[in-house]
Image 1 (cartoon, rainbow, N blue to C red):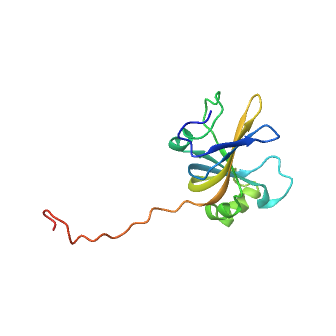
Image 2 (cartoon, one colour):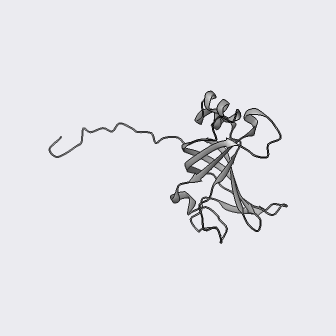
Image 3 (tube, rainbow, N blue to C red):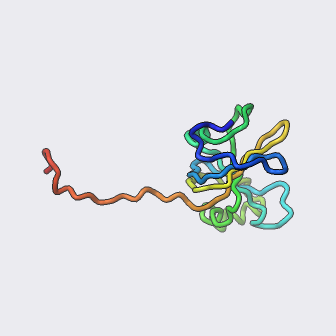
Length: 150
């Protein structure tokens, strides 16, 4: 299902049966950084980052009709982001198996959203583009103000 107010548009079905979407959007939510179970590499190359989007964005993303639970989005191209959200000490502890995961909140810009699955599970991915910029505050000219404070 693709909500009408989705930030992404359907591009195509990939040859391996998952849907690919075009569009860039801000993904805000809880993240979990942990070691993957099926990694062929070693060290930090085996770290995986997943984000549980806030409801405001999750409700606008494409999803499978029978997905009743929360969704987690696997983030690709995340190496720079991982170095920003987890300290060298935290990453070393993850790799050594001393801690199961690092969690927190993040707001990032992503693109290349995909949705796939099989008969009993679904998955979602998006590619990290950059950290979301905080809003810029600007000074205003109050010389024309009226009222008690003018």
